[in-house]
Length: 346
Image (cartoon, rainbow, N blue to C red; front, side, top):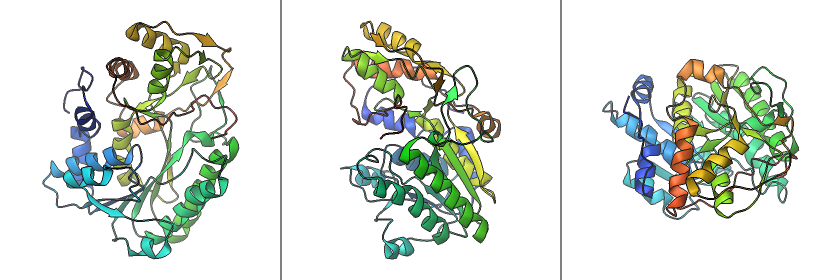
């Protein structure tokens, strides 16, 4: 496995390289996987680095595999950057039945498309993207292995004194976004069973890198001298590269009925402590408001770690990298996570 970098990436190119650097385990996983890989909804925050990771890991084994990223590609430059790194791209609206039908067949599919923010203003689109679309994708690629991204928001808020929700705990989605995500899982499971399609469902919370995520949200608030509400006092995070690696390795673990995995880091992190450490590194003492609640959105990813190993980058290192990045004026995606939203309104 390549050594973990101990110095924060200093620019966008280095960061993108870091987020797509395959480990020995990633290369071995892709070597065992037969056939092409189709990544649907690949134009978002995580999709481009996942596609590049798949391409680089495949190249390590002299693979002739086609890695194909499908998206509307509304963000400028994403498609061109992927093409430059030998990731094939297809611009498509996945809600167009004819366009979905015209996509190339592939034995491996990762579905990342969905909507969280904007749900309150347009819940119909959220339900369509989060529930209807995954159902149509599983039917279209009924003979493939399909990894479907979901969210830890399908769980209720868990006691902060425990280890977080496990895959066998009762679900309890709060708000329409979380409810639509649960609908995604239910419909995917129905059609996977009907067609015998092997599926893995990944309940992710929260992926982080230097341009977005919980750590970046907190760093931005500290830097702007904005008070940090401690009501949601604890979080889980996982370095985005590690979350991408789980998605690729999960293709081989797809099952009927679907395998469900929580995807996050092994640490339960206190928001007050994170903000305090960020303040020390930024030279700005944080200010706080609110009182820590007895519950938070917390997941136990022990099952995932047992299958694929623990993340390669710990939260403390990620926090140091974020602080350094923000201190030097590093770019942001401008997409706050709203991790402290407790009523499910996104």
